Image (spheres, helix red, strand yellow):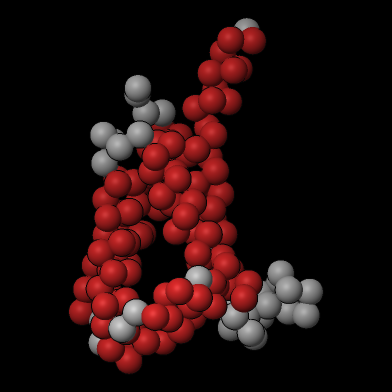
Length: 143
């Protein structure tokens, strides 16, 4: 089941970033949680049904859990990658569906959208974690 150095690097970078973000949200005030919720609801409309304080705590706990899962080598890379993929999918959906975040082409970020658009790196890491070991095994077998 080992973990490759490449996967360890991907997991360390993304896990530390997300864990830190979750810890910083532990003390999020209700107004900030409401703003975050409004943007997240653009990507997943059902999130608008939660109370802002509950949403803020859920995001904090979710980010702490995901960051920890990425940092713990006991969690398989594919499983950690699936969690990261879901997380980055919500971020990117929020980016693409929030008015004013993209240029008229619907993809390139405006100045306001750059903060969310940059999270595409998390989606790339998720794909690498999910598919990375399969590709390495196929290359070894071909040799």
